[in-house]
Length: 349
Image 1 (cartoon, rainbow, N blue to C red):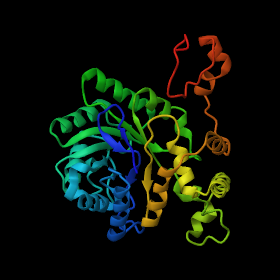
Image 2 (tube, one colour):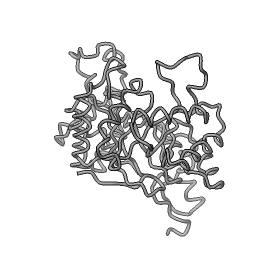
Image 3 (tube, rainbow, N blue to C red):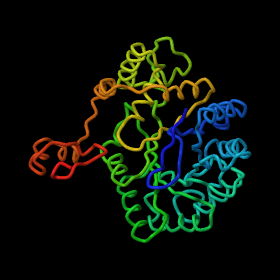
Image 4 (tube, rainbow, N blue to C red):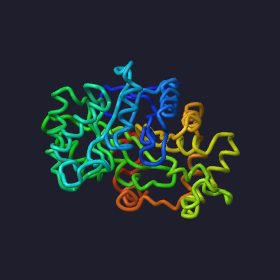
């Protein structure tokens, strides 16, 4: 059964796995119809999950509508996260204020999401993507007003530069505005760029980390390694050598320990340092059941390292410089890792 974690620097208790619902609805030509989406949702809830992730634009609003129906009878038992920023395909493209990070877009999106979710409050509102235009103060003050109005309880960032999130946390704390509590970003055993600045920033600032894309679009399940794969011929042909190499490592480990490739890839992510809550995306009931099997086991340190070694990823500057042994000895006189959860003081305590 699911355990619970505090969401960043807050008192909100969320399940250790989050259910992503971008697959709820077939409006984009793929995904789960309503009966299948209900089965996926039920399986997650039966495993003890209470944390649901959606967005106002997922499947042109259908995802939020399904989630609203599924949670309605027991609304207060669920923590529902949705997002603002992106336009829908059905939006009026002549209206420049239906997308972006502005207060106007935020207010419009939240009001529409509340109607689709059939609720009077959103537990967690994400800024979906940074627009490099709106002042961060405008975003924070707009969120603070929504929190004061009781329409939003908590705020978080998604797909935003680490320096913007750092600035937002500092401004919110100085001015007493609603502080961000989480950060959502792509991360997998294959795609590790966020280890350079995003993840260390989250650990230092007590932000929960919610990785999406933990299976790298399905590549880490090994389905694109098979020569007879015809389910997605174009994607199969376009699969990179790095994807296939990592999948081969995961497939070999899968045979060794008797766990599915998906479970191994998800557990590699959730066993990294920090408060990590992977977002599970499934199109079928069978897929979510398989994904939930991660709760039954953990990878060993050797197995985690084997997957790290399967990529040529390098941390690079500045962490590669700051964590070099000779720098650590020069500064502190002993060795420790700046990537660990706990940073010892110069006296070793």
